[in-house]
Amino acid sequence: MIELGELRVFIAAAEERSFSKAATRLNLSQSAVSQNIQALEKSFGVELFIRHGRSVWLSEAGQALLPLARDVMGTSRLMEEAMNNIQGQVAGQLSIGCSTTSGKYLLPNLVASFRREYPLVHVQINILTREEVVDRIMDGRLSLGVVSKRIDHHDIEHQPLFEDQVILIVPPDHCWGTYGKALPADLIDQPLIMREDNAGSSEVLYEGLAKHGIIPSMLNPVLEIGNSEAIEMAVEEGIGIAFVSELAAARGLALGRVKKVDVEGLELHRTIYITRNIQYPLSRAQDRFWAFTMEQRQVLSTQIWNKIANLIK
Image (cartoon, rainbow, N blue to C red; front, side, top):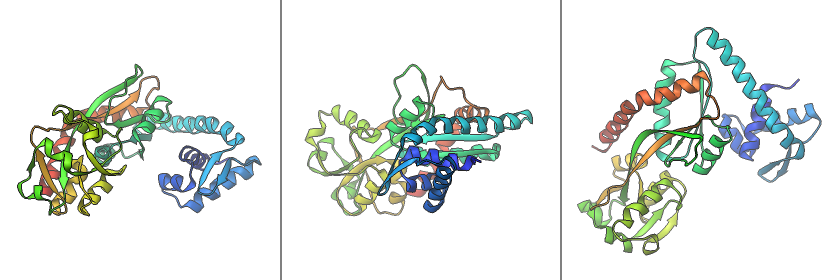
């Protein structure tokens, strides 16, 4: 008999293309993931994955099983939610994709507040690239996503969630750290630690610099890292200076490991959106969370910025 838990592990491994990543996503050990996959393969009498080192790919049988497994899990969730709804309870599964540093900081607070009111809802936060969030929203694998750029598609609905600030940070002993000020033209000669070009913080930086006649080719990038927290640590090590979300820099600023520098005439803001695909109806739990974010976003914003202000004092 096929267990729903085995199908859940199979879906995660198929989507992540890695047993170790699936284990992290499901909060399981890697051996537990392997055992579930092996049990499923034994039940069907076929190999579901082609294994190569640490990477795995779906076999022909695995490719055939994946959409069916998703249907079974979806039906299971609907049954559970239907029974809870009969009792007037908001319950079920809520899967949210997050592509931004600010989203990583925002969602735990928001989800904690939501679950205090709706404790029967099980929430899963998936940390993905923006492209992965968009793809999963488009094909219905994710019900809700948090992104730093609007998706230009007629099926996608957005709601602003948070106004993020992108700031310049420098090592504590940097000459700009003493005065806390610089000019846009001063950036040209500085070693910059950057996110990838299509990251939200990079896009808002390029847009801001363009207003001062500075284009990307004029800058001096010395290191590219796809993670804002790692960038903040690289600045601490003195590798260079960087523009990051103030949320990601808050702890380093509070501990004095980095310093914030105001660049004259360069105000960098970006809107963080919560998004959904209107072609896929939301469950009661998903719909309640969508409404909850609209009700709580101002409170959330105030709480986040107050927390940052208290840290930096």
